[in-house]
Length: 57
Image (cartoon, rainbow, N blue to C red):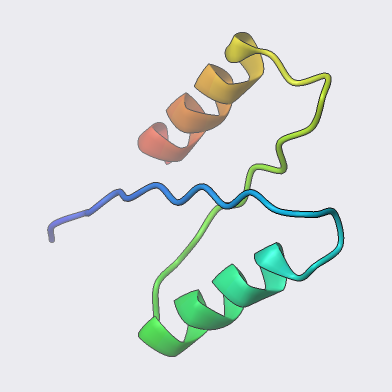
């Protein structure tokens, strides 16, 4: 089994539907996704920990 990991970054106004749009696309393409909500207080360590958690599971 081959695992492909892709990243997607979406930037726009708060509450405009970015996350639901990505979730719908993933569902239609039958792709499992993990979502990291980026916010003002997130740091590099939090992002790296998120990526490592995805890669080891």
